[in-house]
Length: 200
Image (tube, rainbow, N blue to C red):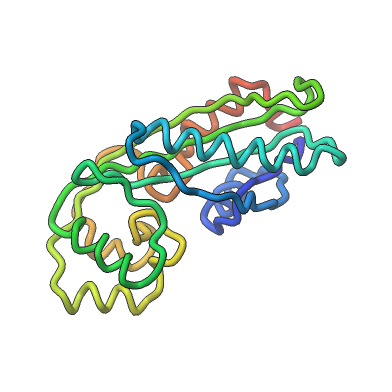
């Protein structure tokens, strides 16, 4: 199969690539992930995913990558958008707002196809999916215990479903892989639709 450049340093996304048996290399985009909160949440996630994929594709132009994949995940609650917390205090505020409530998680994906792009072409297939997550109530000591784990670092909404946060999540409506940051079914369909040569 053809190698894919993963424009993300996320260990979880790398685990999913290995699960699918995809050959890949890691080139974190390292872009400014700021966004306008007035934009529609799905557009924010898709714009960030696209920005990552195109940034890495441009940076690696000399190597002529065949495929570049970017992704971004955001949490939406109380009409507010939660990205990655800046510090422990920011993470604590996010968890306090999520505790005992339902929120939405949006994961966006962008796939750049090198073989079909002309020089400096800035386009890619971009898609997104969402699911609903319900947190059980969390006491102050429980929040502090979770913060001590440092799982919140680099995680949208200050939590990771596949870690200790599972102790506090009472329900997930939709694909759990969406919360982790790479909705597997949608990712597979995206690759298939774009002619990725599975098994070749």
